[in-house]
Image 1 (cartoon, rainbow, N blue to C red):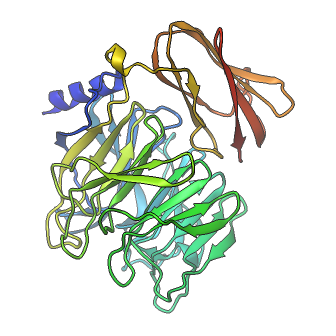
Image 2: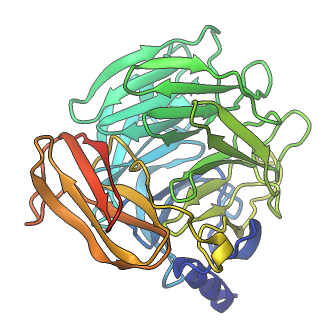
Length: 428
């Protein structure tokens, strides 16, 4: 099994995915969990995926594990521990650390702590970064954008606490920022989110029943909008993933009032006018609620864990499935028809971001970064490329390896007959 899993992942990492969309079961987790968090630094193009916490059937409890899966080596190992077991919590990357909070930590006396673990120095112990009652949430979600952790929905971990539906928390200043209250006294929970550009998209969840609703929170204008589009089916406690390479989002698994675990998948595409095109995608092999899903650097989506019901009555699903999006090319019919330069992701970013582009003919490609007054900061690409889709990451450093300050930067792709410039924002 291990050899088979390694071969399949190497094929994807080498850009040899098939053109047809499909799910594949590729192996098992050695320590399977549901309700954990999967974290991957796609901007750094790492080969390591981290799975934190969750509920273990073997221990019949939430766990404090930090597991590392190295895709290229096909190895699993325990690399750390959180300060307390957590299940159904929130985690994201900030600078070189994984920041996480909340979850079902009923036995804890420190429910309002946000913890930090440096994934680039895995020998470091986890530590409490701050305490704030807004971190004391069950079944919430959230995203880090720049230095702000946007906390969305969930139930108070401490009875009697009143929490905003959306709360921004500045990690640098350790202060609360903007907040939005829900029109209902019972804020939605078990929602699913991903970021595209300046927008956090919020899907499904539970409030007086499982929902199909979609909201959009604009980071720049600090506005929350109810989208006219809805999911094809109601779902909660699934996973939302956006793949910047294919520019498609996927809403995966979860549960609703009819089924305690879903294997269905919905594909989300953001149209030029800002509307959403939502279509039914191929289902997974295994139905899962409380699963963990992540977009890997070469265009596939990987799903870990989850369980066969919405609580702890069923079983953890140990199988790993991957969705081949068919983002790599094999024949002339699939080759890009034109040169293009995509918006970087994430944007704003800190500490690194991904720039995607495509080439329709053999040519010399240059990709450079400039500051706001036009001075060249660094050169990311200067080589001959064959037709295809490509990605490159920028870590916010100049050509001498020095970190550049926060601000607006421009990146320009140039070929013999083509030039296009786009803007990006570095926030520290």
